[in-house]
Image: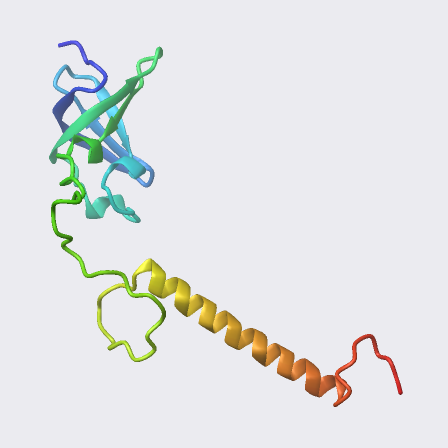
Length: 149
């Protein structure tokens, strides 16, 4: 069987390292799935996703001139559902504008806008504290550069 770039095949995991997994393909050749190609999420420990002798579906990414075969498990998975269009209703709540300090504590992650607003508020608070501390160190004159009256 000729291996073609882009084809999806099933293979057996023959070895696991901290940087990837080696997969034996149907024709007896071995390819490697880099740790970044194991799952669509961040993979810290590859053994949480695959075990030796496990059968996995992989997509052939490339075959180098020296015979090295690069594989991907995450690209062998079905494509995620398409994003909603104008005609379809959103499945998530509308974005919040501004930071709500009284937001109930929950396990839901903050939206980007909420994180940005929180960061800006924290930054402004720190800057005002710094300015207040600098004014008290200089005395009540508030002048810079150590100028005396």
